[in-house]
Amino acid sequence: MNDPIIQLEGLTKCYGKKKAVDGLDLVIRKGEIFGLLGPNGAGKTTTILMMLGLTEPTAGTVHVCGHNATRHPIAVKRSVGYMPDSVGFYDNMTALENLLYIGRLNGLAEQELKARAAATLELVGLAGDMDKKTSTFSRGMKQRLGLADVLIKQPAVIILDEPTLGIDPSGVRDFLALIRQLSRQQGLTVLISSHHLHHVQQVCDRVGLFVNGRLEVEGNIDTLSGNLLAREGYVTTVTLAQAIAQPWPLLPAFTALDGVKEVAVQDHVATFSCERDITPSIVRLLVEKGCDITGVHKKDYGLDEIYQKYFENNAAENITHEKSAGFLQRTFFKKHREQ
Ligand SMILES: Nc1ncnc2c1ncn2[C@@H]1O[C@H](COP(=O)(O)OP(=O)(O)OP(=O)(O)O)[C@@H](O)[C@H]1O
Image (tube, rainbow, N blue to C red):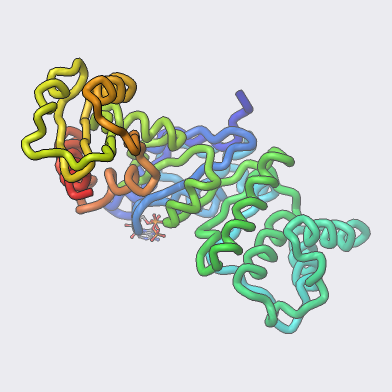
């Protein structure tokens, strides 16, 4: 397993009585792309500010690239590139001039600056546009130039705040592919704070879901989906060629099947909610009973649903896992019945 690059231990930040970040423990390893998710006010920005050494924790520690961010913020800033959600440029200057200016601000030596700026613009796909004024740049091009600003100092970690905001779908695809390529080829560690779950799901190795300053859950999307399936039950939906009669004469045979908790039928579709994944047994029994199957679908949770599970209906703040599981189960089965 790769070395830890970001380590948060018991990280807490209070503003007066408000705990903006509450006892956060998290390790992000070299080369990982980590998605920081959460509703407005969850504590993402405050966490990032503490990682950058821009605000002091009330308690706990942040280490980035082996440096304590509170005690050695300058060392951390040398290793970390931060791209805010809206990047500003000097409109009357070209992309190259803007980048050279940032390079100088970062203390890069003149003799290497030009070559490094040109190589960085090549890396982000702006080599052909380096002599154009940034006033002519699209939002997607500006994001790429913002990324170049961050990459020119060759950081070990980059932190991107809403990097896909306002970019069109093909621009988003290209930008996310670039992030992934940088992470994989150069071992760059990436932290993305975003509300765009679909984008995060496409690119992140792991996500952390923040609620009220606490990290409610973290893991890769398959694991989080698997955890929800284990908690909420496995659901297999089978579509048959024939419309299913109501009441379904085969229902007793299926409710008696080991592992089945509930069966719902509508039109051509039978939905089996189960204690574990017994899709092969369901399919086998349907075939034995002479049913013609035209489709089989196993329920999988995407990040949208995982997020919804933790944040929607303002439920996450106070209710227990058991209650929220019940809520999801009800909406879950209702949804399937409606399909
Ligand atoms: N300087 C401050 N003084 C007082 N309270 C603050 C300060 N900064 C943040 N807070 C509060 O701390 C909480 C967490 O805010 P934070 O900006 O970290 O959330 P966030 O998850 O980044 O939200 P968003 O997605 O809206 O940026 C919020 O309740 C916010 O009002």
